[in-house]
Image (tube, rainbow, N blue to C red; front, side, top):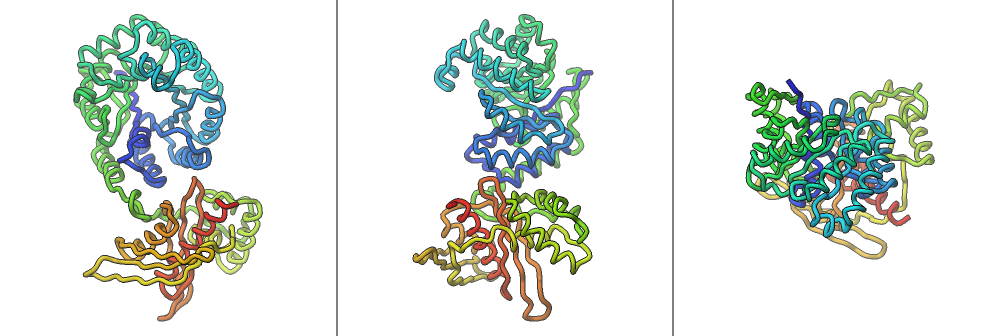
Length: 471
């Protein structure tokens, strides 16, 4: 019985869906879910912003241990090298080369002639194979392509080194029998397809994507692109159930853990539908502490910096020295230093900058009978800025007001509150970590008022972001 590879395209397709915005943390959480679920491949969006997207792919590469991590590349060597560098720590790296093969898409979307596209496909796949073992060539809009040209470009892709060839029915206008015949004729006309994995991607325009996928599998397809969250392609949930219940009829099975499928789909749906990343700084909640980080006074700077990097920071040599010096002072008084303490050390020692924004005043209204409201006043240079926002609690409202004053939404990576003194008048310390352009910035605030320390920590991180942007 054949084992069908399932390539989950939820994150890659979500990137082009304006109504489905996933935050950095949401993508990491989804990748962990899919990796545990047992899908063969997890596809993510490529690199547009070198800094931010490279960090995203590097973070995913460090998390995904069982599935292949697939990233699309552009048809130029610079982008291929950029993606490969981000994927260097992936256990199973995979590159995706996508090309339009129908006349309309070549002419109006890619603005290329058939011969030029053929040449670019061959060159790009060849360059990819020099760097990784797995390359997936996607023949986009294949069902509307000229038959002779489609066979020529697929043969060219295989000859150039593609290990998987995906036939994409972007129109989704075929019935299962028609699609089965389409796949059957391609296999008959291109004997080299027997030497690679034949994949399919089916659009659900006629609500036939799942049926077409099964028809393709019966004809010998080895890989199917599907989504965990409902989109306009094959459903991972329905496909897995069909293959589990009709394995003998299809003579195929998958590595997807069907016993955990319902729970995983529910979690992915919650991530996709929460929408928190679009309107709240808190998005899907702050991350849990990395309990595996335990440092002592005996650890050298290299060991400390490795843990700092695991927390998401990218520090200059000057900041590394400052953080290590502060770490030694703290570690000399404690048995061990964990991730929470290390975050606070980085926030207080790294990237100390002049204050662009200065907190003037804040008024917070909150209770069980009213919506939390924050009225914050800040000074920027000689200008006084003021914003009033409502939120899900006083700190959420305060952070939304700060975002309004800054004119930019920042992704909240972590939020920590700790007591630094004892008693009724205890001082509270807050650490806020913001992500901007793929880099983590942390701020620290101290006050007897937890809301006040949270606002000060946010402003501290905000000033670091503004300083780096200006310089």
